[in-house]
Image 1 (tube, rainbow, N blue to C red):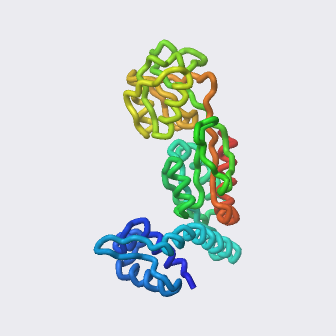
Image 2: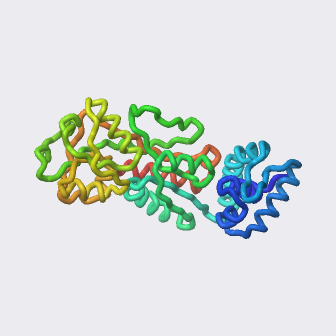
Length: 299
């Protein structure tokens, strides 16, 4: 019989490349990982790892087992959480991953309401941008992911294997210095900013900016790039360039020295909460999804 702890150990070894690194990741010793791997190989009746000096690689059987491990572990987590909630032993635990502007706007409201309704539920929050955050969900390293995708973007992600809870549509706005010639305009076409120096955001948003600008007939001259939204606002406020940011990001930062202008035609991104089908049945996860949806309706 395959044990869950052995699967977790195998996945850690595959990810880290060694018993010692896997032990550090799982909070146990190198000999303990070695023993678990021997027990797992005995259970399945075939070698799972090939050791050559300091190098370690998976056998074909090991690769197959690792491929199935995430789904198996997610299913076990769902079963443990649901049974515990039914039995009244504990209220639940939720591992939530969110992109930064979601963490500073939607998440606080949702988690405050969740704590008020379910004070025993523990939530662990980590920041990550999609697609990495979605990879964490599929790997079984979180329970709920707050993610986004741009309308009409090339190569939009496929989320058919996930439960998708739509939250809101977030419109992008132009951000210009307060003394800029367009600071008082009601709206601006992105082509009107073609000659400006640009401050770009995270790699994903940077790619979307370049795509939109090229669609308007120009390639933006990006002078600065940073994942930090307050830094983007500060650079624009200092007169070092212009930027395009999601409205949700502007709401979490005081844009000193900068002005927002509506962008025409509109560029939007869809904000969603994602989870795995098995995890969607877990009471604590379902409650988190519901509170995120309620927080989004208040925006």
